[in-house]
Length: 276
Image 1 (cartoon, one colour):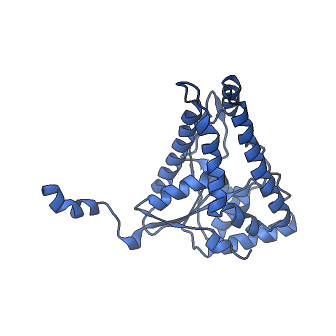
Image 2 (cartoon, one colour):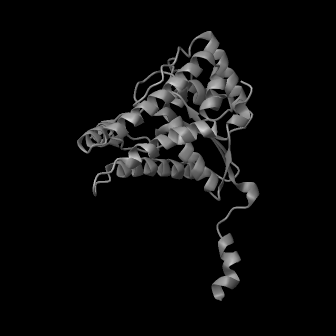
Image 3 (cartoon, rainbow, N blue to C red):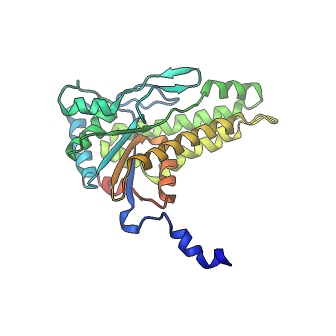
């Protein structure tokens, strides 16, 4: 009886008023510098060409309408080397690089963080960008070996084929679209869902007897994104308007977490990217 009488009061504790929530826009990006680090890689044309530079400038002008107060990027929080399995993957300290960028001491880079995140942060007169990434564990080779040894070769092959088909579609769009049009497509909810579902149609099914290798690796993917979400909360204050620039494969989960959060309002980037 006590709980029932006071439940509305208790449920309201810790909940910020609606007008002081954090607005968060997640913008899924493609790799503009062709680092070749993913399983399936898009081959981007030269973003330093006058045509692409004009398009990226127009993109940032669109996103500036959101009036961002913070910009977060795919760099560790706090800056540290990312330990993945038995190897250490060095990551650039983008927050420090942004300071050099503002001072004009940075060589021109094709990397999407420099081209989009740094440019937008400077246009918004922000004194820093913030890293929110955490280390992940995704042993693709181990999963492939497991599939071959447990009669799941066809499942794995179908997953690879699905990934290659999605990448071919993006490659075709990049060759014919502006940067704004490309990112508008990439960030469509149905496109992000399709990317996300590839994990559920392959990794989630890599199971043999009592060995749940695929789901266990998939849980590491979810754990990484939950940590990234927690870092967004850590850098944010009520009434902030945060733009999160991250690889598009993360966007579906991050958006879902933001949408479900009582502290946040999810803003779709497509509102600013239509008619590119």
